[in-house]
Image (cartoon, rainbow, N blue to C red; front, side):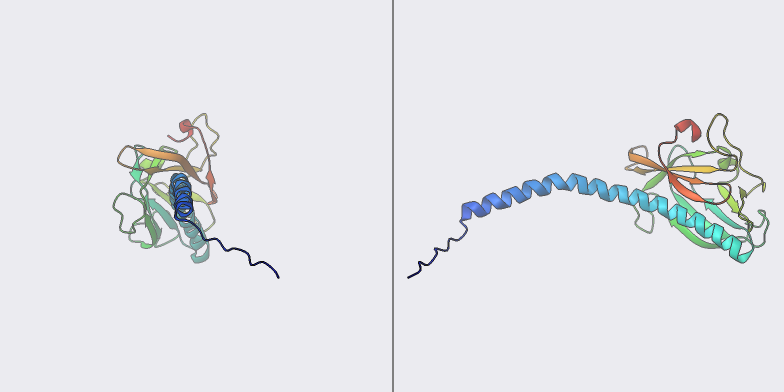
Length: 205
């Protein structure tokens, strides 16, 4: 006659040990998870900016008129990322005034979208500021200064091409506290935008 196997339940002590191990593992994983989420938020902001560039470039070609990427808060000392895409009233870079805003994104403190704060901590060339923080996307694919209709100049002694614009983004936990590794969005004179990493700060004036 076959013996019946004894069935043994889990004791309270074993259950408590198991829960303790799970709590320790969860505690170890939480900082890494939080960091992963914050890095994702920064990448989301960079991707949003690239989307804005691609939208302006594509619409300019499709609609045969100038489109503009306009930074509302551009400061190397750290202003919250805020930009809009504006449809010009004609093909010239002088047609931004009176144009229609077709897209926008905000990552500054207390923004209405609830996005985590991401700041512009550096940019190049410096004349982007004197151009009113506006890039003009022409129907033929060129990216020009919105104020003069000419190419942006390349900063001296850098690897940037004439006409290129680079904007560095970084997470912020306050007015002057920058955390994590920054991301840089490079916008070429032909309107192509992509992420870059670790460009020297002297190229981001």
